[in-house]
Amino acid sequence: MSTILTVEGVTAGYGDATVLFDVSCTVAAGEIVAVVGANGAGKTTLLSAIAGLVPARAGRITFRGEDITGRPAHWRPGHGLALVAEGGRLFPFMTVEENLLLGAYAPRGRAILKERLEEVMAVFPILRERREQAAGKLSGGERQMVAIARALMCRPDLLMLDEPSVGLSPLMVGRVFEIVERLARRDGLTVILVEQNVTEALAVADRAYVLDHGHITRAGAAAVLRGEREIQEAYMGV
Amino acid sequence: MADLANILAVGILLGGTYALVSVGLNLIFGVIRVVNFAQGEFVMLGMYGAYAAYAVLGLDPAVALLVVLPALFVLGAALQRLVLARLRTEPTMQIFATFGLLMLIENAVLAATRGTAYSVPSAVAQASLSVGGVQVGASRLLALAAATLAAAGLGLFLRRTMLGRAIRAVAQDSAAARLMGVDVERIYWLTFGIGTALAGLAGCLLAPIYSLSPQIGTSFILPAFAVVVLGGLGSVLGAYVGGFIVGLTEAFAGYYLDPALKHAVLFAVFIGVLIVRPSGLFGQVGAEEVGLREQS
Image 1 (cartoon, rainbow over the protein chains, first blue to last red):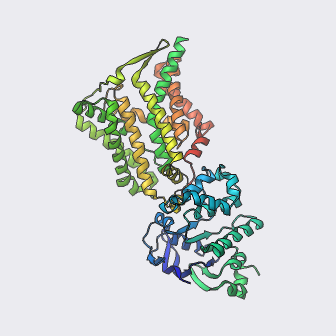
Image 2 (cartoon, one colour):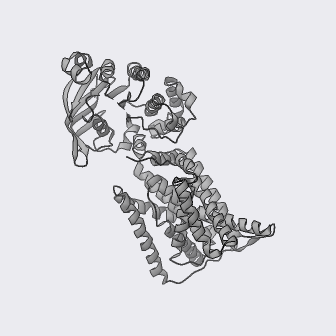
């Protein structure tokens, strides 16, 4: 499989604090890659750096063969890179439909707006019912679905999900993971999944990286990591 | 009865003027979170723009709009990019910067005009109509109509167009808007430009009513702050309705109590509303319109 994303020696942080140290990782087209680690390990910062919200102080990020390190955050959704931030970050005073329309803000999305809206609503039938409802009034699970649907509006090549299971009921977590898996396996979407829920994440992922205090400490096939005693003890509560 | 009709007419017409001045101020606050003290100066520049268009080109203020509005849009957009954008990480300093702009613009105009007071004649605006025995000045009526059109047009723009939705998205969560592909900096200067152009619209339409002086901006900014706080910070509809609340309060207090007390009464109401409803009378609507969520 061809490599779609390469992160090479990226260092990033906020203000005086450095959160990521010389982080490197790769993602191949069509795979689900999990990034796991404790709270504050730098998982969100890694996604933010790839999304352009946090500048990389050193290193290089290459997406589909192009160096995108210096590209602004708003360039990325129109070029196939989408991030669903933790909690979904919906526009609370807008309707579900308006949120989805904003997902298609980039020219790439506007060109396919009508058909894409139908496609996305076919993946998440609940959105059709909630169409006119204010996003701020949705339940946690519905909110997460709208957020994922919104990120799909531009038909991304790479979808990054930051803690999609946080605050959801176990039933809802199962459904969200099921949808993510289906998008990857059936539609060929590439996914980076950041999760605290390591057991579930390793169950759907092809490969995984373990992030610890801003360093990547382990990498490998999800099936292998899942069986490792160290990983089980540190992250899976075994 | 005729008295009451008169007071209502005065209050509503005055309200239209206040609404017109306040809509842009509230848009800027809602989206960029800048309390723009210089908004009154943009009204003043609109007035002088109308005067210049009359003196040089012989244009009626209602026609001068076509020149003054784009000019003020460009000025506002430039000020956002060159001044306020550089202070993004210092929100308090942005407020001081708008205060600095207030003083700068006022004194620049003072120096340029040597303090001469001008008046702008307008064939369109000079007329007055008699509606059911109540005298209504055409200028005020025009301002009322413009305020209504501007508020409605802006509301439609914000709700129905992709760019309008992007502006609301930035107001509600600027980081999430970036993730949608919205160039947030561009939205800021566009918004500031629109807000400034709206002040210019007010200036052009009010120019025939007032005697122009460089200090006149200050007399608009105080009621405008009362309007936006009463109506709900950040809300276009709130600014529109707030204008009428302020206009009517002034008219009734001026007639039934004492003209000298009208501003005292107005600000007593203002403080009362703040205590009872800190989010303004239309706080909910306001939140819905542009949102008042913590940015990150």
